[in-house]
Image (cartoon, rainbow, N blue to C red; front, side, top):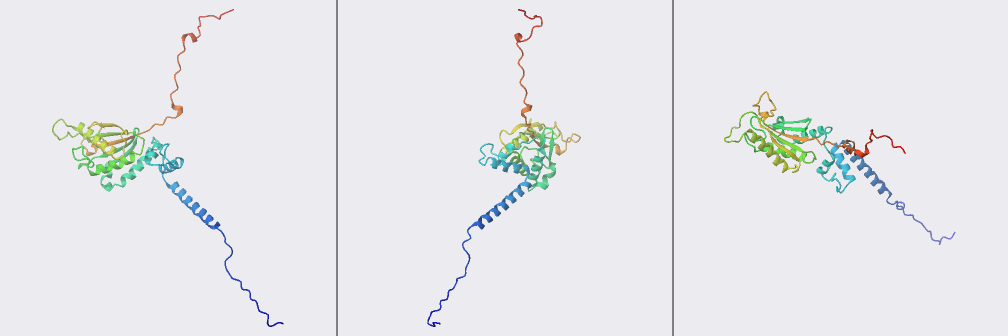
Length: 269
C-alpha cells in the first residue's frame, strides 16, 4: 500500500431541510378567520332583534343609501315599525334606558309605562313636592329634563307618531289672573314637547299637544291626589296595510244602453 497517498475526509454539514413555503400561514389565517366568524355568530344569537335587523340591513346595503338601515339607529327605526305585536319590546327597552338615570331610585315610583289600545302610554306623575316640574309652574326641574331627554333619544329612533298630554288635579290654580289649570296643563305638555324636539324627537313626529286640566283624572276617587298631575306620552301604533287590504275599486255604473230591456222582444229577421 502506498503510504504517500493522501487521505481524503468528506464532512457533511447538518441543517434543516429545504424551504417549506408559506402553506402553514394560510392554514393559520383560515383558522383565525373561522374562530372570529364563530364568535360573531354567537354574539348575534344573543343580541336583541333590533340589533340583528340593523346589522343585517348594513350587509344588505353597506352605504345606507336605500333605507339607511344599519347606518344609524334612525335608519334601523325605519325598518322597525312598532305595531301591537312588538310594542312590549319598546316598553322593555325604555325601562332599561330609564334605569340608567342617576336619580332612578328617586323617581321610579312616578313613572308608569303601559301598553294600551291607543299605543304605548308613558305616564310621568308628580308627587306632593313636585317630581318633574316646579310646583305650580310649567318649568321642568333637573329630574324632569333628564328623563324627557332620555325618552326623546329613544323615541326619536322610531317612525311612530307621538301625542303629548298635560293633566292636573282638581285643586284650583293658586295664581292670580285668568291663568288656570287649563293653561298649566297645556303649558307643561308644550314644555315637554320643546325639550324632546330639541333632544331627539323629529319636528314632524309630534302630532298633538293637549291640555286636559282635571277632566281625565288618574284617580277619580281622589281628585286632589298629586298623581293626577302628570304628563302623558302616547307612542301611537303604526298600522301596516297589506296589498290585500287595499280597497277594491268601485264598479262603474252601467250605462242605460248597456242594460237589457225586458220589454223588448227578440228581433226577428
